[in-house]
Amino acid sequence: MQVNIKGQTRNKKVMSMQVQLHQLQDSEPLIYQDRPLGQKAGEERLKRKQGKDKVEETTVTNLLQQFRDTLVEIEDQKKQDRKIMLEQQAMMIQQSQEKQELDRIEKEEQIMKMNISNFDPISAAYFQNKKLEIIQKRGFNF
Image 1 (cartoon, helix red, strand yellow):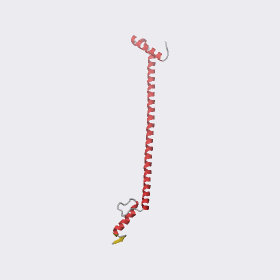
Image 2 (cartoon, helix red, strand yellow):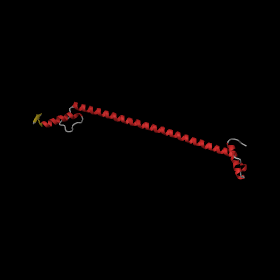
Image 3 (cartoon, one colour):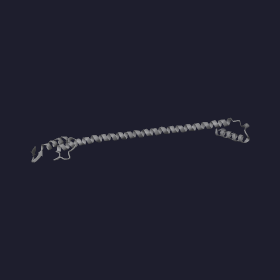
Image 4 (cartoon, one colour):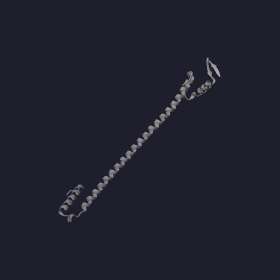
């Protein structure tokens, strides 16, 4: 059936399809539209789109902020881990030095307790000099 609207002749099926398409304008603007949107409809569509953009912008901004916060937390954790590791290394070094010092003192004590009367003259002289060095190191002067 043919209908005459404002000097245009159109088929009823085509018109019903156009009406259905016009009702779907909420989501996306129609590419093949006979006439431009009205001023009010265009403004409303623009407001809806800007609202969606703001929501999307806010969501993206929130995600970026969460990402930054997570990165900051990770960096803080790395700094803490490094600090703990350095403290542990310093403690291990200190313990190693203390152990070396105790070993040295123990060896010196063994040398000081030696009975060099039964040693050959060269060994006896060597250990006698070691005993003198130990005594001088400890602050006793003869």
